[in-house]
Image (cartoon, rainbow, N blue to C red):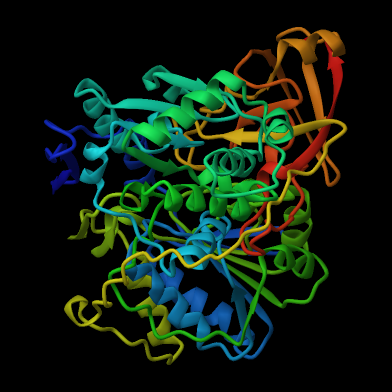
Length: 545
C-alpha cells in the first residue's frame, strides 16, 4: 500500500500486485492505525500510590534515564515484541545489551518451532516466490486460516481458484477459509504429522506404520485420504503450512513430516511456511549476558530473580502462556514498559514510556510470506522507538552503532536441500478432558483491540455432542479450568470444532481472566516456541447465562 501524511491526516491507497489487482487495504490495518496514531497517551511514572504524567517526551526520557541509572549493574530481564517487524526496533536490543547483567530470551513464541523444523530439514527458512502457486493444480492449506491471518494471500488464492486451482483445507477448526476451499478435512488437533506419515506409507516412501490407526487417531475419513493420495499421485500440488501447526506439543515433528511428504512428492518449489521480516539484513551487533528459554522467564521473574523487567512492545499477560503467573511476576518485579498503547501488561508498569509506534518510525522490513522488502518514512512526528532508544542511550552514555541500510544486506539463503534421512513420528498426547485451541479473529490483530471490541467475542466454542453430554446450552456461562488457572466465557454450540476440542478467540480479556490463564508455559517438541494448543482443560457450568 501507499500511505501519505499531510496536516496530521493519514491517507491510504492500495497498490496493485501481480497476485492482487487492484489491491486492497486490510481492515485490521485501518483499525490498527486508528488505535496507534496520536492516541493522547503520555509517559508516566509510579511513585508509591501516585502516578506522575510527563507533559512531553523530553521530560519523560529525562525521568526514565534517572530511573534506570540505579539498575545499571542489576539483574535485568529484557523482552521485546515484534513491534512493526521493522529492523530499527533492534536499537532497543543494542541499548539494553549494554547493561552488563541483562538477559533475554532465546526464541519467540510465534514461529521459532516451525523455523527450526525447516532448518533441520532444508538448512534454511525460505519461501519460494509466491507466483509458484500459480503452477499448482491443487493447493493444500495445513491449518492456514488465510481469510483471517493472511488477507493478501487469501486474495491471491481467490484469484487462483477462479483460474482453476483446487484448494484443500486441512484444519481442526472450521475457519472462515472454508468458504474458499473445494474440500475441507476437519482433522483432529496435533495430527497433521500422522496424516503425512500415512500418506508417505501408502505411497511407498515409509514402511511399517499402521495406516488404519494413523487415520483413526487423526479423524481422517478414508474418502478424504483417497482424495489426497489421488492429488499427490496425479496433480502438481502446492503446500502452505499455517503457523498454528507449530503450537501443538508435537508441532515441530508435524511440520517435519509435512516437509518429508513434500520432498518425496516433488513439491519443494511449492512449499510455503514463512520467513523472517528481517531476513535480508545483518542483525544488530548485540550480545546479552545470557539467554533463557521461554518456559523459564516467567517462573524466574515470579521467583524474584530479577531486579528489573524491561518490556518493549510486548503484552505477555495476555499473549504469553500462564497469565496468572505473569501477573504475580509483574507485581513482584519493578517493570518498565515501552509501548504505544495502554495494554493490560502496561497497567502493571512502574514506568511507562509512550512512543509513537510504527507510523512514527522510518524503517525497513520484508514480508513474512511474500517476496517484498521495502523502506518506509516516518508518517507522524511522534517519538519513534528508534529516536527514544538513541536519546536514552545518549543520556546513559551508551554508544549505539547505526549502520546505513545499504551496508546491512545479508547474503541470500542457500537453496533448499532436503537432508533428513529418517524421522521418528511423535503422536499427540492423550487427553481425558478437552483440548483448548485459540484462533485469530478478523476484527483485530493479536491482542491489539479497541476498547470494548471484546464484547460479543468472549465465547467458548463447543461441539454439540459435548454440549449434550454436559447439558450445556448456548449462552451458558462456563468456567474453563486448566492446570495453571481458569477463565470464564459464554458457551457457543457449533460444529466448527470437533468433539473433545474447545476453541476461543485468541488474546482477549474474557468474562473473567484470559484464554491463556488456562494455558501452561510448556515448550513444543522443538524446545523453542510455546505449546499453546496442548492445554488440557475441564469445563464447569456456572449458571444458565
